[in-house]
Image (cartoon, rainbow over all chains, first blue to last red; front, side):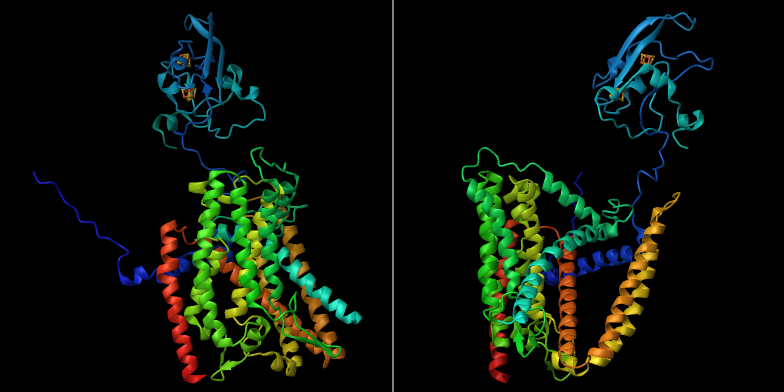
Length: 174
Length: 428
Ligand code: SF4
Ligand code: SF4
């Protein structure tokens, strides 16, 4: 079995290209074309005026976390610690407590995610056996001026709704 | 010395100092907006004072305020504090001094005496430039050495090596130019370029020295440490090169020095090769003879330019997304009102000149003003070429830089001297 040899054509060895000056002028013509196109009509810039115009987020996009509920409003999470164990950056801290709503024996009393340490890998979502934690809030910009408020608590995560309907979340497309 | 003499001296010095300084602001703005437009971005367009953004110029103000109020750090390991502080000043001052000999209008005759329109009215011209511009790199070397930092030293060394290799082709390109003009005096060179070749081509340096202009421009780019020759501050290999230890206003001086140097070398390229202050086909004498028709033409042309500029502002100074109480509508209105009041003001001045002052001294002043305007416009365009090249070409590697300098430019400039002198001997 002979190895396939592909001869790559070398570019840039002709005399005119070696002169360099001609190629410089060609390149400058290209950039000047862009310049004038944008100068004469700046609505053609490939720019999103960000804080005012938001990008469209795909349902697959891993945004800020949230905790989901059953139809009857009870918390889905059973405090199994799967996500905490799986988290590569060790930023999930769960405290489990006894549960009385008949769903199971345990539920989280405290569920903190330190968003400063989170790398948004999504492993917590993959690990969860209850589909209790999701990253489908569509929140992509988490900012604050102190460290304490970057720790996401149980209440906050239960309160945030998902940004997509169930169908498109399952399919991964809108 | 009469009062007029003193006024003229002050005016010329003010021009020689204030114009490069105010061009720094314009050039920084042009670099940013130009860079953005070359790359299909929008550039600084948020910073404003009460909603007025002046096309992004306000951003410069914000930057200046930031740099002024930054802490001025002199790192503890620096042993020669004097040289460390001297270096940015040297860069800045030499850049500014170079402009002093560049003429910005033809010799002005008012009140019975003539004034050479240079900040320093001397006739050593290009020699002064060569002497001073070579000195500018001392600032860079000094900065690199006194920062006591390996990146700084490497940056300084690179700058030194680069200047040594490019000063030679630059000097040789000038030699053939001097052979053509037969003078080192920049004002005389500019007057020479007001002539016509074969009666219809303006006798600019670029026509007489097509090879020389390329060599000179390439060498001038290298001399000002601009891309593609800015490997003295190649941030990918040596962080920031010679100014790595500098902060706050000392860094700002380097930064401004770079832009002043860019402005000055553009001005010099324009003076040597692109007809200086000469308006093509309209030499000073012709302009003086036809001062009135030219003014009338100007009065017709101004509103036309104003109209198109206004349309352009209206089209581009708008929000590209839905906004409530769009502030840009008011902004655009104010800009257009300002534009038209400027046009009206100029028209009134022109009219006043036509009715009351035409002939004699006023003609000369009008011509000088026109020439200053032409000179600044040409220099502005040349600065744009600097920006344009910076955002088109990648930086050279060190060996490529030396190869181009010694193996390409040097033989070419020698060839240029031979050809030029042969032509001069044959026809001159
Ligand atoms: S996204 Fe990754 S890093 Fe963040 S909490 Fe989940 S598992 Fe941890
Ligand atoms: S979120 Fe899911 S994986 Fe994490 S503790 Fe709750 S049930 Fe277990």
